[in-house]
Image 1 (cartoon, rainbow, N blue to C red):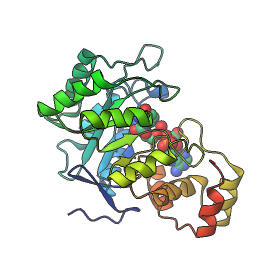
Image 2 (cartoon, rainbow, N blue to C red; image 1 turned 45 degrees about the vertical axis):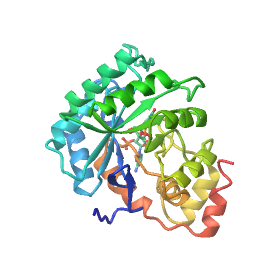
Image 3 (cartoon, protein in one colour; image 1 turned 90 degrees about the vertical axis):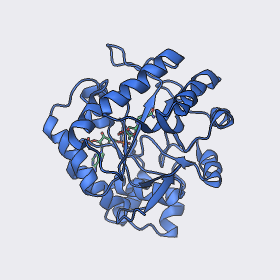
Image 4 (cartoon, helix red, strand yellow; image 1 turned 90 degrees about the horizontal axis):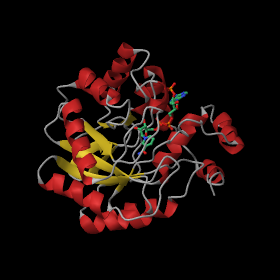
Length: 288
Ligand SMILES: NC(=O)c1ccc[n+]([C@@H]2O[C@H](COP(=O)([O-])OP(=O)(O)OC[C@H]3O[C@@H](n4cnc5c(N)ncnc54)[C@H](OP(=O)(O)O)[C@@H]3O)[C@@H](O)[C@H]2O)c1
């Protein structure tokens, strides 16, 4: 059994135990998540630091770079420790302008699963999320053909577990009618709480919720209430935002992104911050 001193302890994704404090690799690619990083060795060091600090959940996608973060993960960490679980996603391509055009037809999904296997150097992917919607957020519409394609690849033994990303609650339910899912990866943080009900429903089902942009993503979280609480606790707003997410629900797994090993250490320390009932009540006013 995995024991950890990381804040939040562990969670089991299907049969895979992971630390609730994970690492999102997107920030390791170049500007606008295109091309290689300016500091290749620094990127490798961030990944190795994550594993040295005990993180066993790394989030990536073939679309980051494209292929760049997968290649960095392989270069830094292959052969992978048994405890490490790499979560990837399929369903979007990149265009030369850095856009994220959807690629959810069966042929594109099959190709993307094989590309992820190859670039990560794996025979089986632990967990694949089907990315839905577009860059502006979830969009309604059936995921049946796409999710059935992934379920088929799972039956073929190429994928252990499935999840969905950037999904509406209706799409989550539609996916669950096709095959079990172990996580939903949607945008959520202290200031963007559209998924509050979904998080609680998933917690009741034992399904993980993995917020992307936990720190606000490309535009850092800004709120006078957050700044006030952080100042009172002599902590950074980022620390408070991460500690709040861990307290929000036991099924929330963190994948904050950073291209800096120092920030990674700061974020781990920050997520361990203890928040009082008064702090939580005050923070609760932000995204409501
Ligand atoms: N499913 C999807 O559609 C989707 C979409 C977006 C992201 N994701 C996943 O979610 C993960 C997290 O999202 P994200 O990385 O975009 O956003 P995020 O975690 O909310 O924020 C990352 C940003 O915060 C900065 N940062 C992190 N720690 C910091 C610290 N201690 N002090 C100052 N700045 C700090 C990073 O800059 P530095 O590099 O300078 O630290 C980076 O600019 C991604 O890595 C990716 O794996 C998924």
